[in-house]
Image (cartoon, rainbow, N blue to C red; front, side):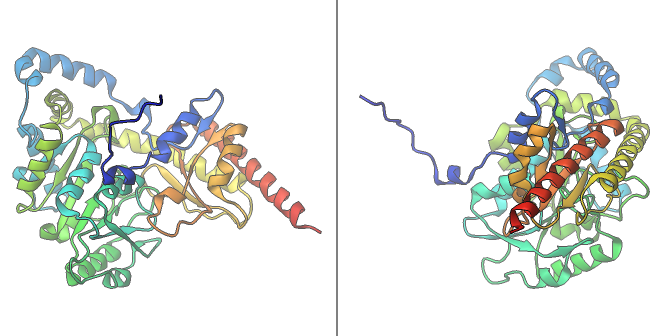
Length: 405
């Protein structure tokens, strides 16, 4: 007699989908595959010795406190450090507004929990960060894609968003070296976006995991510095220290802080206090001022290597621009190329990438792909892009032969 399951899934579970990036990463574990897929920082940038020494200091100076339950808001000195750094960017932030989270990904989940009802509109860029779509989707929003260009969301598109009750709850935006496109929003566009959002009474959720990874010039001041009462700001230590620490933060207007804290308490009580103390020990005396420029120099050289390889190896009709910071190139392939359909051929040839489709809430561009350049050497980047170019040319040649009568 067949067994029947006693479990009934909640309706929201049907809206949870696996991360295509995580699924693709499984393919990259195959021998010989050069991966440009994962948004992983280079492990060669991890401050291993500094972490080892900081762990020893924490366990020597405050072992009982570090290993005990901790405050849900986060470790006080770390919250003060975050507030101080944001104040240098022009933001008006007090430590009381800083909530330490288990990665900035948790911050997205907490924001959705307190702001999104079923059927409520949520605005996103097109394309946008896949992890944000995953975090928001279980709360059953109606996604509205905001049209944009190389400078970011268009102010006139913001003005056209739904304003009637319940109204658009917020617009999620990544102004600095956006994942996946790598674009940075210039000063004039930031001003225009904030003015449009204010006129539309549209709150902003500003995600900034890549802002410190600029190559030639730092990005303009955050949106949150221009409209603090209307903006929630997220940051992360994953890209400048190590993602395995799972340490991020949310900075919210004071009226939202109590509900975010309650959502945090319900989720995990607090982010690991030991991790917070170790990170504070590492960064407290200005370590990042020396460490981050080294990451920038390394990533810039890898960015340049990929730009050269793309120019040399991709077929005519491919479109891209070199990012001014961050970790990604966004490619639009020639007509006749479907990035998702071509992925198995690429992996078989020994190279992996992320198709662009999952980064769209609506109307995906099937000719797009994201390439990460920070985990491969310049030589490996050239080999990987050369292989990708060969796969694309073979596909285009095959298509042309099939079309020839």
